[in-house]
Length: 154
Image (tube, rainbow, N blue to C red):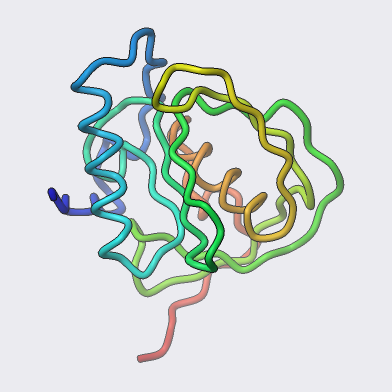
């Protein structure tokens, strides 16, 4: 088990556009495992590879509600439906939350760890998590999209 340090706001890697993965090998599977282990030890519901210092297109989402966690390689939003305002936080920007307009529903495709194409239709919290984590892969943080950002009280 390897729990990685979560990269914090201001680190240049969080603004980089991540590289697409051409081939799933043991190094890529190790990154997936590190994302799993790190997210399992955090309060958040999603984590992207750049948040553990790796500029690759991999995300991990675990809503921690009993649903199956998702590890996705080269994720892409293929369709967005509707809009709504949500409150978001980020493991890379601790102590703040912001109001962000996100799609109500999204279609997402990518590859699983076996290299097979997978597709998801997501709404609610899962849709927001997909949007948030895929943004990280393009160097976008929720504060870049936020209408307002608030400092949380202790």
